[in-house]
Amino acid sequence: MKLFDARALRLIAAGLVLINGFFPALWILLSSLKTEAELVSKPISYWPQNPTLANYVRAFNDQPLPHYLLNSALVAIGSTLLSLAVATLAAYAIARLNLKRRQLILTCIVASSMFPLVTLLVPIFETMRSLGLLNTYIALILPYTVLNLPVCTLVLVSFFQSIPRDLENAAMIDGCTRLGALWRVVLPLAAPGVFTAGILAFVNAWDEFLLALSLNSSAAMRTLPVGITLYQGEFAFPWPIISAALIVAIVPVAVLIALFQERVVGGLTQGGLKG
Image (cartoon, rainbow, N blue to C red; front, side, top):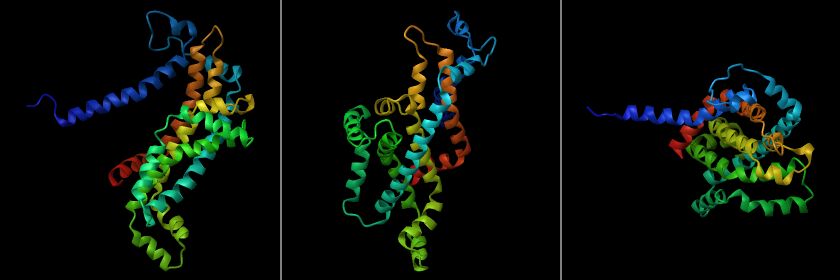
């Protein structure tokens, strides 16, 4: 009898992934319920002895956290919608039109996503400054859209390729234009892929820090990742309050994924199998 069969190895691997994914979030949640004295006490207490919500109250009182949430939401939603609109047209063209050097185009899309963001910071900053867009929502929406386009396009290409062409041909015979067939036939069938691409684009925009810090220096335009760094003082690092703010930042993404869990999981698995 084998010491570990394939099923046991899969369960162990799944357990390690689960721990790696959820333990940091659980630790932050527990830290947000502790006092600062309890958090730094030794030996370490993993569970709060006297759970308190005072850190959440201070997180909202010490900084304009609702305003940061609003800014992040507007930027993330705007860039997600724009990314999906552009990526849908690009992916459909790659998947359906007889483009020359199609494989080269896909290779360039993949290659464009490999540049470290720090190498793009100066060109993006100079472009936004020359256009007079610094300290605006557009200053973040446009770069986030460009950064999200490769992954969104690749996800949608794999889904569009899995949809039979006969369905579109039938719709166009019935009077639909090609864009009409895309809207009425292809997109509903590719809904899991659209949701997957949208979630990925939203999370990337919601979590991004470097561009948000560099392009929007105005206090009124700060997004949530930048705002959370302001809880740190010159000689103080209030971990419980920062943990509470981090939980507030995690909740919208967690709720979004929970609401569309089936579509996202279906999109990731189908895209991986059919791509």
